[in-house]
Image 1 (cartoon, rainbow, N blue to C red):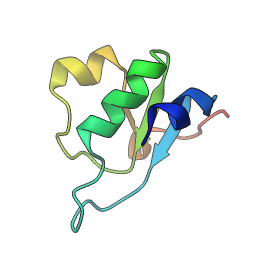
Image 2: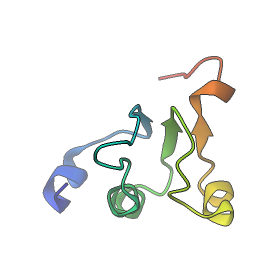
Image 3: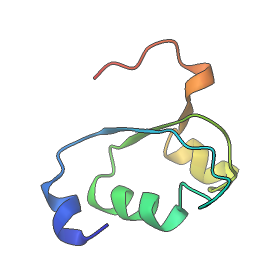
Amino acid sequence: MSKELLEKIKCNKYIISTNGKKFFHPKKKILSHIIHYNSKVEFYLNYVRNVFSRDELEEYEFKYLEDVVEVQI
């Protein structure tokens, strides 16, 4: 994920749906790049993978799809 791509994407909500078994996604490095270019980002993940610490999860308000009834786009 390049700087140029992240500067072009105008999005605050990201749904990340993966099982993480083969490639171990999502990668903290990529999510950190997204946060760097947009501090108001919301991540919606389909499972907990311990990519971020508890403090980071609270700071960036990560949400898990199992806890969310509806995502407003």
